[in-house]
Length: 55
Image (cartoon, rainbow, N blue to C red; front, side):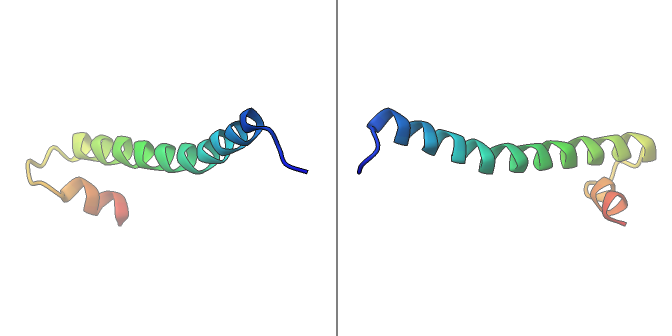
């Protein structure tokens, strides 16, 4: 028995969301954290916020 085209497309869409949403949220949260640490440090050197966030 085969599934209908709309049902298959809906399944692909949901699987895509399950993979994309966590990755996008992780990237967004990392960006916000790095920018926040950059603001706290006040150091104008690129990469210092990333290093401080990872430390």
